[in-house]
Length: 349
Image (tube, rainbow, N blue to C red; front, side, top):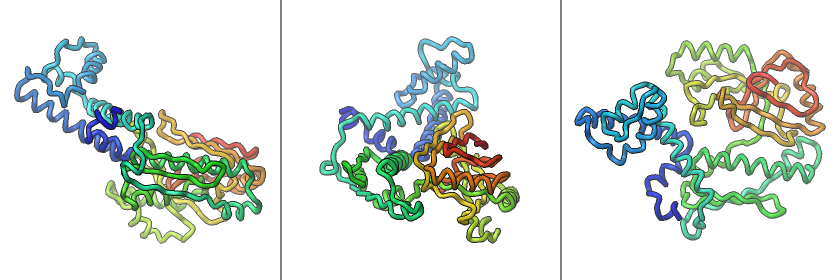
């Protein structure tokens, strides 16, 4: 009931932002509020703290303690201002704002949802078609493989829903069937939902083209900080089989860090790529220490043999693991990989 009757409309709106939008909002609000604090201090150092800035007090107390100082019992503008004197303080405030709205977002899963009939919105039915995968494999999928495919698609949908910031989604599967039902109360933007559903969710493996990648990096350096990948790509006259993909590091918000992205040119030709159709199960997790993703997957019997031959042929080269248009990992192939159970951490298998 807190969500429906006690939560402000503004907080509901902000908590529904995508991760990227929420990060940007948090950074801007942190800067704006610290500027307001400075203005308050300059006007009257002994003035009391307005309610809109009171959330800064617990952060300031921690900063006092970190500096081996005793926090004041009563916070005036002067006392609060002295709790924020370093460049890292804005980052702490920004993260605090981000966590506040992330907790609201997580709390949505525990509230009583209004149905589409009460709140309006969109309902989407996704029917799984296994024919293209079965054609690639040359056989029918087993019951276990079909169940795993549905599970993976539901996980991908949940991840996309979170990144797009859609409100109170409900994702369920048809009992014993091959359909997934997605209900999004309050959502009326068909194009936004279409974008969410149109991405490709499976892992694909491509051999990195070192020569073109080196050329790409040189052109990025030459272009400077305001480089444009589409413009650089056009100037490189890449063959149709060569594509550019980004590899991001996650920032402290768990969002792709645009300032730490690295680009690679990969070879998408059939002989230099490995389709994820043979993957039985897979997972992508993020290492908070490095910001890099860790990819683990297991292959069926046929896939294990094909992956062995694929890696055997490409020993000494680098392999890019791509999902939804982004590189999840790049690792050097030091030897032919057997067994069908693969883990890629950082730049190694």
